Structures are given as C-alpha cells and as structure tokens.
Image 1 (cartoon, rainbow, N blue to C red):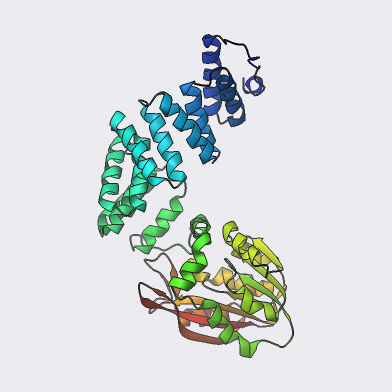
Image 2: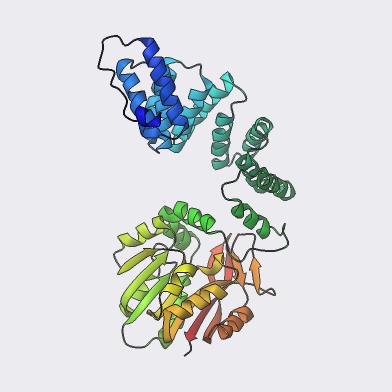
Length: 416
C-alpha cells in the first residue's frame, strides 16, 4: 500500500471534492504517518488542504508531522491555525504548546498547556511539556506536582521517573531521587539506560563505577553546551587548563615545528597557544557542535569528529605532541587512553594532560559526574604503558561554586 500512496493521485482541483474521498485520503495519510512514511503522509495532508484549507484534522496532523521534522516555526503556524478552528481539542492545544516551547516561547507554551489541561486534566503530553518548562524556570515544587500526576497516568513512563528524580535531587531529597532513577531503569523504556547507571554510580548507589562516562551522555552534554561553552568556562569558572599545560610544556618542547594533536579539542581553547609551535595542528572531538565553534577560529589544519579511544590506535607514530585539557574527567580507567596515545606518538614525543585530583582512591567518580585521579595512579600507569613521567604538578584548574577545583597537570614522554 505504501508504494501506491507514495505517489498520490491528484485531486485535480475540483471545485467541490467529495468529503467521502477526503476522509478516505485522510485515513490513508494517518496510516502512513503511523508507519513513519512522512513524505507520503505529508503529500496527502497537503492535497487535502488544497481542497479544504480549513480542515482541522489535516492542519493538526500536518503540524505534528512538521514538528517531527524539527520545522517548529511551520509546525506552530499550522497548529495555531488548527486550534483557531477548533479550540476544544486538548491534543491540538498540547501539540501547539510543544511547538511554542521548542521555539523558546515559554509563556505561550504554558498558556497552551493550561488550555489542554482544562479540557483534559490528564493529558500526558501537556503535563510532560509543562513539567519541562517549570523545571527550566526552577519552579521545582510545581514541576514535581506535574511529574507525580503524569506518573499516575503513565506509571511505566521511564523518562517521567528520570525527570521526577532530577527535580527531587534539586529539592535535596536525594534518597527519593535515587529510588526514582531506579524506577526509570526498571521501566525498560529508557533510550540510554547507561546514563542513569552512570549517575547512580556517582551517587554511590551502585557497588561498581563504570570505566568511563557513556559517550552519548558526554556528546549530548557538549552539543548543548557548545554555544556558551567558552563564556561559561573561562569567564565564570576561571578555567586555566590550556595555560597550565603550556607552562609545563615550554621547557620540554624542541625548537623545531611539531605535528600536534589537540585531543578533545572542544571549541579550540588550546589552539592559539599551540599554533606557533605546530607544523600541523589537528583537533579531535566527539561533539559536532563544539567542532563547529572551533572551525570558525580558522586555527586548526584539520578537525576530526571521533571518539578518542577508538581513533588513537589508528594513528601509528603520527604526532610529536598530544595535549588533552579537561578531557579525562569523563574517563575512569585511563589505560586505554594512554595505550592509544603511545601508538599515536613518535618515540620521545610528549603527552600532556590535565585531570581532577583524587585524594586516597586512585580513581573516584564524583557527584559532579566527573572522574578524579590520584597522582600515584598517574605515575604508576605511565610506567606500565611505556611512558616516562616528566612532571606532575598540583594545580587549581578552575573554580566551582566559588571554590578552586584541585587537579594535576601531567607531562609524559613516550619511551622507545
């Protein structure tokens, strides 16, 4: 059927198309829409609207479809038209609220959600959207009420448990938050359950910590963070990682130009101090949006989007220097990183990186969801993976909540 519908028969612009035909075509469009055949469904919705521009149902579902394609301005326009025609449909009001929320028009979205909930107090879509906005506005008690009502309606909604847990955590109700995170995991509906297991490990609620943060968690974090990354990190947190690395490297660098890898380069904070010493400067990061910001600086010779532990072993003896500023906070076990770096470095080449400092335990997953490492661990691991420890210094690498964050700046030299 999909093949036949994908090339819909035109309605030929008749002055009055029989309503029975329009209803038949609408049912076909809905079936295609449910099956994910968005191009075919959209074509039919638009054909219906060409014959009947005031069709509430076609406007509503086409608005939903345009939202699925992330065309939120068009989605909002179509849904607003639909609710003007029939303001008494809760689903349309809730869908309009979602479009407005994603266009950052939060007051309009809250008004649409309120109308949806007046019409249908247990409209899950409106409760979800309203809860997100209240969370963003730090109205945590009101957000909690939303999620509690939502979970009475949809008790197996995994993301609802996660959002409720996040709200409880902000309200200082840590034990209840952990219980909700566990409910979310038990639902079996989470797209990325490893993120929640990682979070639970950071709270000490599981016996073993993962060896690294889930890559989808890290990537999603920095995709969102990219636009304001430098202003926040440097301007507000007084981040000093690149400057500290260069201080430790300068006495050790040869006079000749070097082939340099900026590992986890982010927006390129290390690029300017590295550029004068580089014949070739490559930046590697897992976040496309961070790389977009770095690309605008026009300092790197090449930027590569990849996960570092899988990419490094493919670069045999390619670099004279690798630097990694504030990257290993998302890696507990650094052995795969150091082994990969050893492969990618030439003999006697340098590897410089910063880490957060752990007292006591060699590796510690902090409540901030970042890993910290002890100086003893760094020295031992360097020796075990074919490096000589040139230096490891205790530093304040940035500030957080008005306090300095202790860390280490380590410089290793590849042996042999």
